[in-house]
Length: 262
Image (cartoon, rainbow, N blue to C red):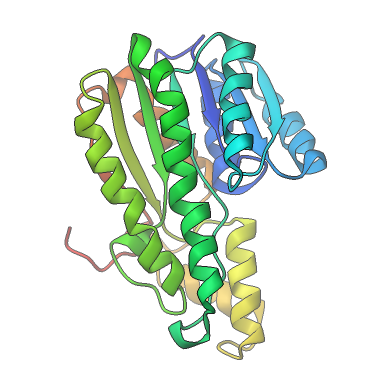
């Protein structure tokens, strides 16, 4: 399917690895010029090389910290300078630490809110004038934890809900020029999942990494964890005219593992 977005410009944050990288890859395959972002320059340049293997558009890396307002302002400005505007904004960010409620210090709550919510607030404020010029899209990558609380992920369960409320509000306030949607990933084979598994092993919740991976895959109706590009393809679809009547929704991409009816 031709998604009709070749020649567009996109910014995908936290895209040096994981689901952000997969989203940038899917967009670049469609001929979109993409700015990728991360804090580690070496990892970011490695991601650029990987994405360019299949890219039909230009891939431009920008080092920036999403918890720094000045970095976000510079990130948007460099995207506009490089590509002449922004048609698509895809927000992603690293996940907060795992652990039960009583073991999470107060400063981690503020850090999680700054990373997960305020990064999106600042990115949208800076990008909105460009997205509104010719009509654009915003896709926020959050987590299935906004629909169903996940054990030992209290920060993600609580804080990410703010992104969903923001997205729904933006889908009305920025309409009809800008469509705003969210994707809610379940278990995908990413470095973040590896990190959570390692933390679970350290806490003694499982005996080994192999046991944890097998348990996660067996609990999914499709019988496996997701490939990140499967989520990336959905992000590209939501950024395209092919999804032109979809806005204000939050779509689980979890292989059917969610237990919520809605």
